[in-house]
Amino acid sequence: MSYEEVILDHWRHPRNKGRLSQPDAAAVEANPLCGDVVRIELKTAEGKVAEARFEGEGCAISQAASSLLTELIQGKSVAEAAALTDEDLLRALGGVVRTRLSCALLPLRALRKALAGLREGTPPG
Ligand code: FES
Image (cartoon, rainbow, N blue to C red; front, side, top):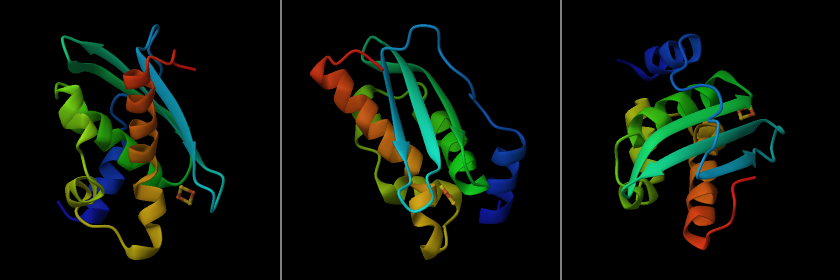
């Protein structure tokens, strides 16, 4: 699928959108350029991301990237999720135009914040 097809597919049919009842980790990130926000929530079990959800208000790219990210990390170990690079997500999206990188990477910043909270034992907000 091309980049446009991936974005449209996830934007029209978002995966894992919503909230978890008792997440083990959660974080919100805002894009300072536009104010759009994405929230990522995780439930972990035996060192793995058992469930991932997202919620947000924003452009198609940020919402589609959030949907795709939840698919990428579900079932992975927490360490693998933490090791996910910007390039990994951009590659899964099929490449993103340079001017929209902050949109595409917004959910990854939220994920890293959520995982940092998990490591530090901060209760999810
Ligand atoms: Fe705000 Fe894309 S325009 S995240």
